[in-house]
Image (tube, rainbow, N blue to C red; front, side):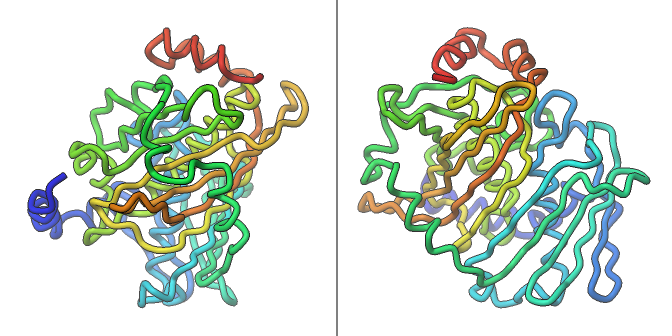
Length: 334
């Protein structure tokens, strides 16, 4: 994408994007702040869909970060926020499309904690722990070990994977803003089944994933949701099962600007048990692709997922196109 077009786009959006991101999460209800606590209602409507009938976990994850930024405990100097470590746990009260949830964050000693509850159920649908300046040197060093050595190995030999119609991350027929990402298996002959999804290689990204930006910085929700789904795809390739996120941890090493070339990647690491008690683990991250081909780790992620038979069957019916779905199942689980 041309730098001139990018700058024009940012100037046009500068007055509206901040309110767009916040309104996407909380609508007209706004945010209520009381001392060291911030709260907001979160509507899980069709905009937030992941699995059919279920909100995408990345929406709740992003809402926690957005609320955290309203607290004094969030560093005003962006340079002091990084590395930013965020750990989420999902479970407890289930969430479905049509539910209205309450999102809340509170400042603690050296961290910000958060939770999302559904109705009167005290068991949280999601909990979060956010730490600023938290180091994860091991994750940053280990991520590149299973990737190609330079950008040329990341940007070729892709096997396309199927997608949903209305998913926030991969939906292609949404009427409301979404990320519109595609997923690919990186070289079907490689020993590790690495899933990749690019950002910034297509000018159309300015109106999809880069719509979720504030003052030229892509909002974390885009990466939280996309990395969660990419690692989930990696886990599917290892297990042959669809699943829901149980626990996931991210480390952001810096801001990511609109216009950067980013490759999101994930893989399944191990599988334990069999349905209906199947668990799988995965890891991955985001790499910035520099002009000289150098790859810079900007985000790392690791997660645990619960295999769900009903969701595996949903994939067979709802993913499109059918021939890519059959191919994905043929490649998975071995």
